[in-house]
Length: 594
Image (cartoon, rainbow, N blue to C red; front, side):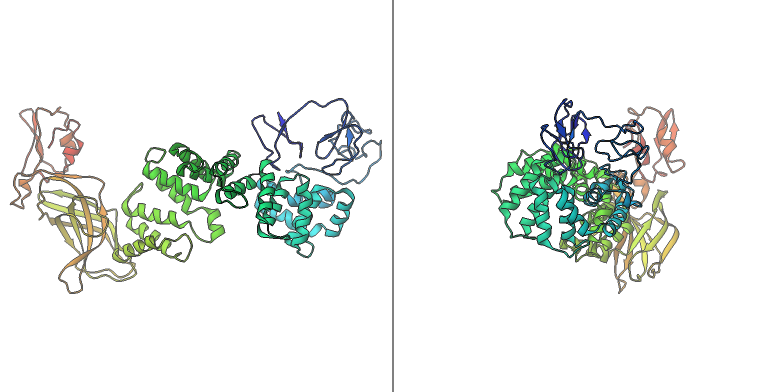
């Protein structure tokens, strides 16, 4: 077991620093039979010492029994009265109205502040850790009540008597923010310096920051560096990260990559999410260490799991290319979403994290890690463009987003197609106008493309078209689409990606342009001995009887009745009925259909 010499709280053996004030922990030792200790902070002193050098509290003998003289109940260290019977410590039967002194972060009653001594209240106002335990809303309520209750003159008077560190910290904060007094950077600095010189890590860091910007003192980066390093060496993570940044940038010291890496690592190992992110960057760039993809991924993941928006984005990037991990587009898409909609980032900057918003739009546009969805992609691109004046907006990405919005007018919702007997049928729940303009006449076209289509010129072969012979007004759509047309295309033998497009007639009616589309997540295989005829009977699949395992899968999956039959104990494809959909070839477990 380890113990914090400042707040006297106990911690597990594997903990290095106090989570409340950053002080390095010490091994807990058995109390000796002689000497004195401070009942407030727990530090021990020789027998002849009278007062604590840290907080000014009167010392008590280590072996002194701490029980109520009236009822015999055990008293907490430093208690002034018995919580059971109300008797004053060391006296019998006398009830007194003493103020409660506590450092229990969970037990301050914000509705009865009059019960507590002034030092406790000043301490509570200075402890940011209370927000972690109580929640921000409750802690904000406590701060408002404390600001109204604590009088600056009372604090000054009490500090003059006790020279208590918590009072000095409060005064530094009060003068720095003008709480109950006139704001004074000089007074804030002077009070903070008193606490810093007595070894308070947070105060040391604050003084370093004051020297860095010249708040209440003359700007001095060397002194800033020295104070921040003192705080960092006590385990205060904010100081450790600042110190690492200073070593990285040569601010107040000589630039030193190894030192920067070491301090990032120390802060990261204490669970600071920004340090975890910075450490991941070091491993990725080989800054102050060897490049290590696995370690970079591990620390990005740690920071991402802790909710750090930038780390969530970088983790998505890792998954998208397989950096330090297995490539996983679906995981990448999920982390892009977490990064884009991070509530802390949005609350601080007033908008979503734009690099992740653009990536989400790209995923939806190309169907990477998710279903292709032009409608949602366009909405994401529009959202990205709506914050084009923000610092994290990329102009090249903005041009790409605007271009895609300009030539995409329609979306196909739940589109399907099927072919049989030389004909093709297309269906869709809706062909929706998603642009801000009315369209001219529209039609659907089925293509067998050489690659999935995502805009621009379509590389493939026309198969059939399905005209609407009318356009769509803004926000309107064709619902329950069900159209059949003859197959007029005749692609060469090969594998193709089926694509359904929405085409708009040009203004002069001479041609048409693709204004929407849907890719299908499968391939079509075309076999053909002759390409001179448009008859589907010239393009059909065949069964290799020597490889056939006689399972009957082909007949069960074929969408055309009579296209596959069983003759003479063998399966056979009837060319006159085959529509070359490729279903049988795709499902055959023996790969016997070609």
